[in-house]
Image (tube, rainbow, N blue to C red; front, top):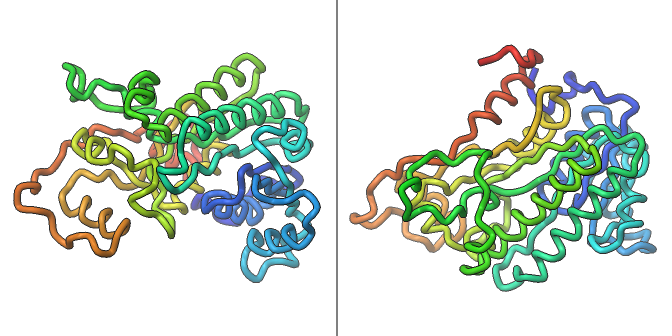
Length: 321
């Protein structure tokens, strides 16, 4: 049984919400969840409330190709706003699960302290709305590896230790070096965890690596400080299919708990760095300089997620080493 397969669907009759559903991960999740039998509330921050044409266009985008008749009745499109609690509450009403993500601007120039504020407010409003939803069973919160790796210890004695789900980026360090993406993801995830624990909401966090989706450029705010991440052995990427499968596993696996670092490529070898550079800019050199041929020891670990994915694929929970 493979994650995301139709045959694995246990979801008949359940409703789940994907918010914000506008990005590549949102689209991939809506597709998988519809195929698995869920009724999906696709909530996007970019949809005008009274624009029927925009809603129809989004429905067409979200529906699996050639499956409109089969899945259309189970797809509902909502407008949401990170500052509008009531709109968020309308989108999650009646849902047993919520996949919460915030699509950070793709350009560092557009990612600033206001972005941090928006993400924190969105996290607060979504978790509060989930707490007030009687049918709610679980929340899968999309965070980032950048909420984990900027600990500020690269030059300290423990800078060689493994980086895993127990690590948190240092807020003062992120503010000092204007790592707004890391600060936004760290503060929003901390806000979500605080509310989840206070309100008794079952939550799992997926700390995703750099999403290698179409349109990715070197200007993406995740990549601020990329040379330092590479040198520290913590630069990691993930493709949208693996990331979406991990979200479904985190929601459906009864053994899922806490945080999960999610990536399927650690950029530690010179050839990996060249491949990423060419993905970001086709004009990038095709081979690394001769003085940059050192392989970087990988410090970032995702053993916890690998175990979860194995359990999900096998259907055997809590018995795998």
